[in-house]
Amino acid sequence: MAKTALQGLRQRWVDLILTDINMPHMNGEEFVRQLEADEMLRDIPVIVVSTDASRERIDRMFKLGARGYISKPFQPETLRDEVERILGAQHV
Image: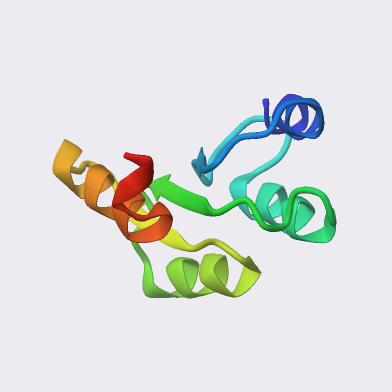
């Protein structure tokens, strides 16, 4: 799924990416790593949404380039607030 997403992102622009850590074929860390390595995609903000709320994982994802991290389960307002923080209220 992440490989398909990378291909699609090169063909169609998005303002924000939501990704999980645990995905088939490519985990979220590798996905964010590949986004950051791609000059065309590296500026798209990424919010990680995951059940893994360990401090080590969160720190690692921010170091890789994620701009937000939401732990599951979460309230819809949490996602809204994080999107507003990253994109600014004018995009919401």
